[in-house]
Every structure is written in C-alpha cells, then in structure tokens.
Image (cartoon, rainbow, N blue to C red; front, side):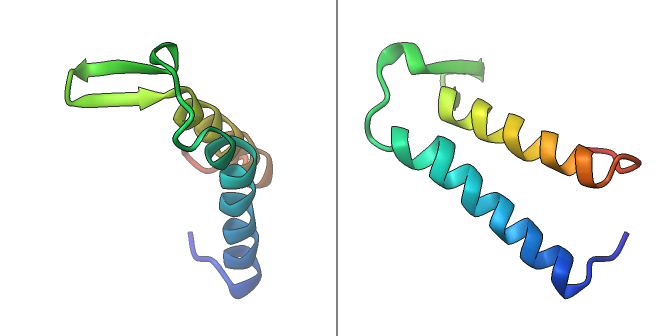
Length: 69
C-alpha cells in the first residue's frame, strides 16, 4: 500500500486528533489506576494509550477496510 500526500495529511490529522482528545488531557495527570503492566514492570500502558490506539485503529479500519491494522 502506498500513500499519496492527501493520505499522509489525513493520517497526520488523525494522529493530532488522537493526541488532542486522548493523550494531552491526561499528560502528567495519570493516577495509579490509569497505568497498568502489560508483560512486565518495565512494559507499561496507560488509559490514554489504550484510548488513543482505539481511536486511531477505528479510523484506519473505516478508511482502509482491507488493510491489516
């Protein structure tokens, strides 16, 4: 799959939207319940990470339904 300039612009806006909506509102404001371990104490994931990934993945699947996301 190749991306033209329009698709790259769309992707950049999607990432900016995820940052605005999910990452930045929680930046340096996470509580203990907002962070959990994935595979070890060094492998952490936050609620912001999960929500941003969900938003990005959903939009990618809408726009590129045949792509493996």
